[in-house]
Image 1: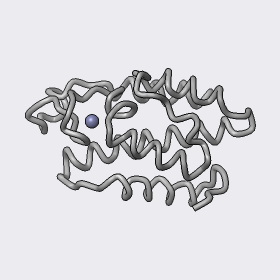
Image 2: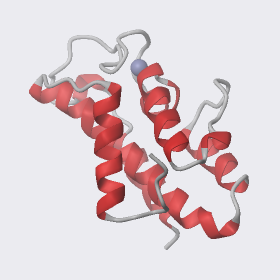
Image 3: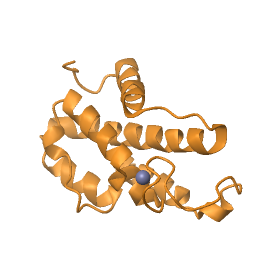
Length: 142
Ligand SMILES: [Zn+2]
């Protein structure tokens, strides 16, 4: 099965209403930026915190040119558009990176919601890099 379909299925399962998420949050604002209502697409695509994580990770692997503009509203369209800009040889690695970043952003969201633990952008970027080192996608420049 194409990994993109798998992760989109997982993400659709994660598309929740805040009131049903164990009743842990009092409002619907994003726990990563506290600026806008949280939706799964905001959290993984348009949130300023998430965008900074995406940009810093993509820059480290030399794929910053596929960073979407602020008018990309969903992870699915972002992912599809971005991978078309990469050579075919890089697309599987890119797919893995998208899944990894999405997972770690979701995990950061849950850490803040459930455990009240907050990590900064660079700490999340470091956790992505540590996972990439454990399972290399492509050589990392710095
Ligand atoms: Zn946000």
